[in-house]
Length: 391
Image (tube, rainbow, N blue to C red; front, side, top):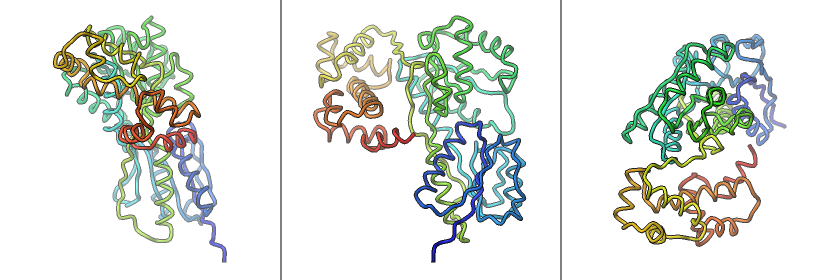
């Protein structure tokens, strides 16, 4: 006898790039199992026209809990359910509904490391005015500040007074004044890609150059927003697709009546997707700048630390000390970073065979490249290419 299709309601915000990526992850699971009949509610959360979930006769629900009406309806339905969201919505822990949310500390730390690796020494965070569901912005702010503070740097903060772009003229004026007051060059983390794009527009309006004056990184990797920005916006990919897939797999387990042993699931970010808004190396130390320029032009030739020392005519201890103080890492690490970034770019943007990529990036073998790539990006080059192609 054929297995009965399970009826699952999928409730999400169709305006949210994050929610759409979650749904893409759910869809991947559905395509693998082919056991679900999916009911979709895809309006904005505040406009959801939900069915009477108690009389719907469904088997399970996956829902964004960032609106009280949605959260209440799902809890009251008493159906097996999995929630997801910002971590600051209307989720009720006492309901024992499993809940997935992003690792905001890891997101902010990744953004800070990215800007620090650019040699930047002044930092800023652009968040939102506080409300009941955007504690994620404050969480990212705290971790970003702490990350740069550990390296001995301070961070300027902007929240503004208005939540949305409906008051864009006022937001742009206030944001522009704040951006102009910052020391330059400055590395700025925006709470999300929407905020990042607002920062870029404000920079253009007040004559600030990106990334030369203000290097900007957002969060969500909303490809439409990032590519509508000028220059293109660098962004942290949160791992929403993985969240959707794992949420769907968990719902499949609990619909027959099993209890989830864990109810809180934190999903780590995937990577920083580097675009034009952070393509800068701001290095004040002349010998370090000279060394980095040499590495940038020669890393594909399998250069070693001694080659860099010969090029800039500085002792090893002297250059290593300057690198550590200026960039926070060694000369060897700088060479590896250039090689790995070139590898990542060629793997994701071309169909070149891995043997050719290893040669072009300056590795002695495919195996050597694969080992270091796996440590840096938590995936083999082949897997990374496959995942990027599916996005």
